[in-house]
Image (cartoon, rainbow, N blue to C red; front, side, top):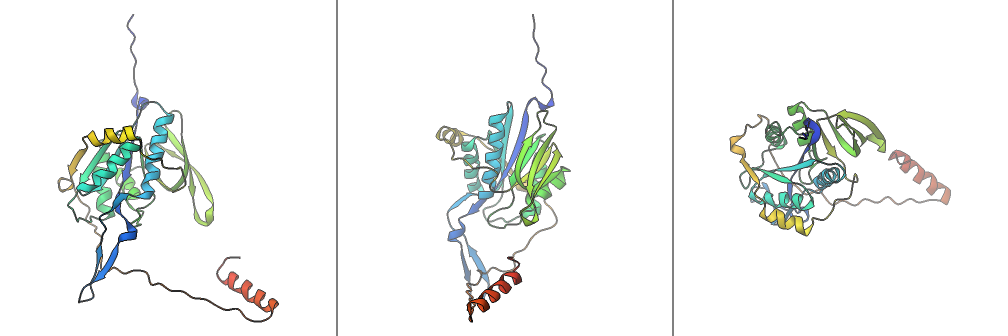
Length: 270
């Protein structure tokens, strides 16, 4: 007797996780030349964007809880960015894609989103995940713009998610103003930008890191991809000023209490 297994579209779930390599922010130095122009000196220490680690962990958790899940991880950046693809595979992802730029290129969020969207169109992904923002630019724009270019429903500030058994939609819990939570059902495919605290990112497994070191990543030069017309230019850099301000409250205990209450009300703390 011949037995045939017919696999439908959702027999395998494809997930794409977007990650970014960022510099060690504790070692960044802002310098000024003789004309007062500021420049940014980056450290030689780079790592995966902390917010994106939550996206990688969430994808791997889905893979562990469901059969037939495949995870691709993608990054945009220079040659050194491959290191964070290796880390993602060490955490449990399957394959990595490197959209390679020049060493000092700063394409901006619109162009990065356009490049990711161009790749994602060919992948038939059921779910795209990313961190809510990057530690260096803190724009929070790449995910939503990529979703818009792909025509996908999306949500930001996601604090919890549950995929339906038929893979038709995902129920999410997202953080909104004032610390409140919003519950939303979103049809798949979709893009979600995850908030820190949704999970606890794991350390890469040694066996996976050994596999990652042997892994051949797909590399696509970004000069072969279309760019967006809108660019972001940096016109200056400066460290935040160090300011300390104190207000001494005087008077009787009752007067001090009244002044303290007035201050707290003025700052909307009570």
